[in-house]
Length: 336
Image (cartoon, rainbow, N blue to C red):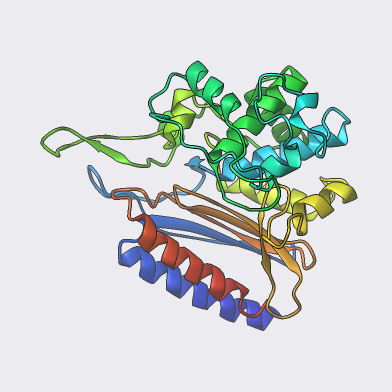
């Protein structure tokens, strides 16, 4: 097993370094968990604009949609406390929501159907965007289709705040950071963060890099605090979170909801996309982030990986990145 793990790791690292040299991302940090130990590699640069800056450890990354995974865990913890039902209709908790028949579980699995288009959603003031999210109604019978949408977790974040009477930032502190000893935050010190997209003037001259500010425009419109994006974290924070999820941080019932199929064959749990291990078909849970982040865990063998990059710097070549990311996942999964 250990020999296989070393061979797999070498193959994956060779693949990632080649992708980095080809410009898929300026640099990356990857950390493999096996036999209760993390093995971590850093490679490449933090930025290439305005100049090349070597990548160093212990920086905060814009986790983008990994925020959804963390908010899903917060939701499960709130449910464990009896403050929220995952199966009751939203009408039980949120009078403002037009989609009163859907459940929190529908939001967690992206099967609620709240995919309707919101005009100028990336420019709307935060309170207006919130109102528009509340006005969304299902585009299909909830549970019958799965389409990934930020809208689901935007609404989930608003519901968590209403049910608990606390902000998402406060819930992040109480439900995640305090029990796990992590430092996830919606309000990072900008100078401690890995930059994301560069901004240019009308003559296409570099002006600055987004740094310590969410790359996601809807999160920015909401003041940086949202259920779908906006959380920043370090590798060691994600390492602690992954170990906690593979341990007993969640109650057994919550573990089943988070790590096994909860949809009609869409490979979605309450918070994660699921993969099947090729060797025996056991479930593995995962989540990705637009900025170039990724987490995967194996609840049975207590192993997994964390991948961090700022692949939107200096250019956002999303499709090329997704192709490399999916090949990376395939390499990791092929002999598990």
